[in-house]
Length: 312
Image (cartoon, rainbow, N blue to C red; front, side, top):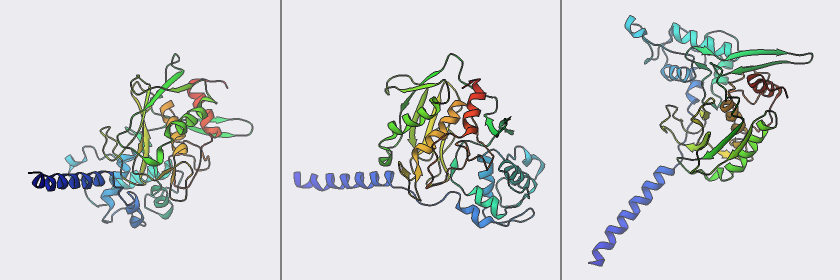
């Protein structure tokens, strides 16, 4: 009897090992790579891949076909370069301080292909709340999330905990990395932050997730959207894409975990993306591999202080 049972058990064990390997294998590819092949496209053309571009622009808030289908001209699911797509590209170009052409020129394609934060640039057709601050020596630009959500004046100490849907070996020091990222914001504001245990209620929950993870903001594999965070809310969350090549000391094809953490904490405090290409702010939407950008810039500091009325 034992001799008959052993092959069955061995087969089951082999299937489990194979299935486990499939779950944890890392997908390859560049979710935004298709954009490179669309360079030069303009209104009136029909080119394979434009449907993907429409989804990209919809994801980041620039395109919404809405009820256009009732008029018989809904091109949301085809590869036609229509008026709405041209308008969306112009909005994207304007938001990123590019030459507003409405076509996919080289500079636009280059900007679109960058790995970036998953937080949309435009929400419900509303661009960031923008404020410009002038002083003798500087002209600072910073943006607030539409509606200007903020933590209440009574909420100056925020707690956080970690709860991931998947383990990421390269992020074994995530606790100390996030603690340092929170300290950078604490040094320029009146906020303090502390980690609590998993069983304790927390203001912010941080974790690594893969693909669809039940928050309507599915990740897309290596590169593409690399992380996202909610505005100040009673259910605040910071999610990292588990499929990225994370590092504490990034090489040319790795993402710096602390740099991305500092950026996403800015969203948790109520700051939106800084769209000034010359600002080099932490809150810029693009977060390319191989770059370490952990120190808050003047725009970031002035923005969070203006949002909460902090004087120093």
